Length: 193
Ligand SMILES: [Zn+2]
Image (cartoon, rainbow, N blue to C red; front, side):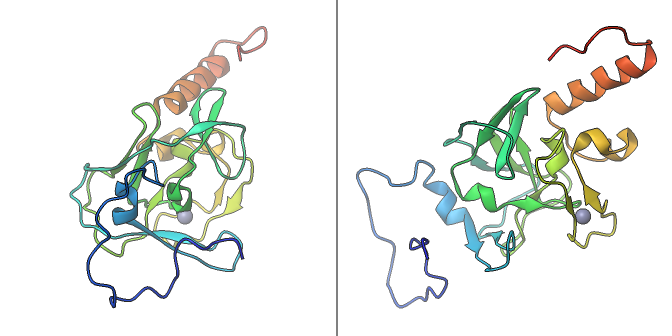
């Protein structure tokens, strides 16, 4: 058992927050007051839950602790050929086909999705194909949404009309355009990396 930071059985016996720690152990201290992780022994079963109410479109967290990474189950794509590791509990934001959050990797912000408010207790989720063109580990989605897409591979395998219903990062929009261009005009030569 490596995880010692948060006991799942926290109760209210302790009065009040500890005032100040001079050197913050978390680079994104706000996150701890906004996100709680429900850990599960099932592989990929842990999930992040909101501790706050926020209106649609509001800033939920800045992505402040990211480091360059390679494509993996835990990475997030930020450009055509660049991926980062979040290095924070934002890692526990699972995929949903009807997500509560958007991950804007251009602005390095996590925001509440447009069109619906975030409520305390909501699962914190985002639409993985909004950042991922191709996924290291495709999976069968079990988000339970009415419009669940089923098997999730990444944006490259999803119909553009379906993608059009979602917030998409700019690199995904560019990659869709570039693919459409290749299909249209009898592509010669290799696509640029
Ligand atoms: Zn789904």
